[in-house]
Length: 341
Image (tube, rainbow, N blue to C red; front, side, top):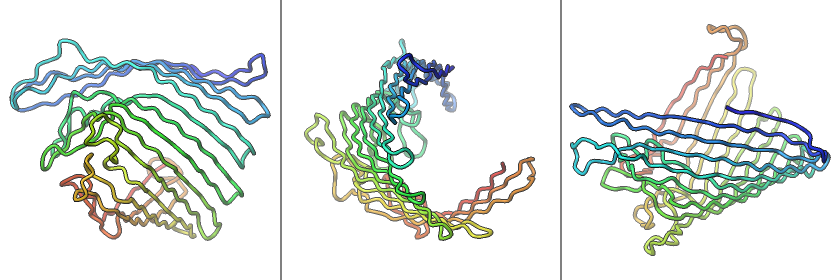
């Protein structure tokens, strides 16, 4: 339930925002032959508010926000021996925390140059897969605690002409009780809480419109990740599965009938484990994707007036680099989608 408002304060400051509350209940049932498990439930209650304060003519806007959330998880612990029935909890696990945030923006040259800064403190509850696993290689961990996250970033948007757009951002993120996946046997992995982590980086994005020659876009993220936990074995090491460099480039050309596209994705090498074992590194990889799409205007079988067909060839070179032990990247794939409007 949300209430939105828009008003002008006595000082001439424009004020808009929203206030609301939310409630959610999730249920997870897992049935085994000859066993009846206790029902697993998560109840989430929250309240939130946010406002935008702007002074007309200045281009400045301040946007503070606040969220409070309470999670009540009723998950039975794993039995001490496989095959034994699960015993319900006497009291559910309760997680409660506020999440404040603030954003500052300044339109230095409206439509051409804009700067933003953000700060936020939040937390992320474990997902169902992290808690209960997935048959075929992922073990559940019902003792997981939510991640506590504090993030900051500064961003600049520049549009020197109608054909060019550029975004440059610096970010830093600190995570307490970080949840990471680690192998716990030869062919299975499990998520665990691993103390404090930090990621610092720079991100750049660009878009260019070349008229009849097409439209291009790209982005690159350069980051430095560090384990800042108390365990001296891992302190100062890189975080697993987070490459130092990630890039993507794409180009799309429209013809009279079809729209053709190509996309290149690249990730530098990264580690699979917290100890940063050289023999267990994920090598760098490049993926090439091709696409072709066409749109028909006119009545379709669902009564709409627009139909789109998209055909994609993913991972053109059939790169099968292994990410997690036993699970490679999908090989060369074909994906076809038909969308009715």
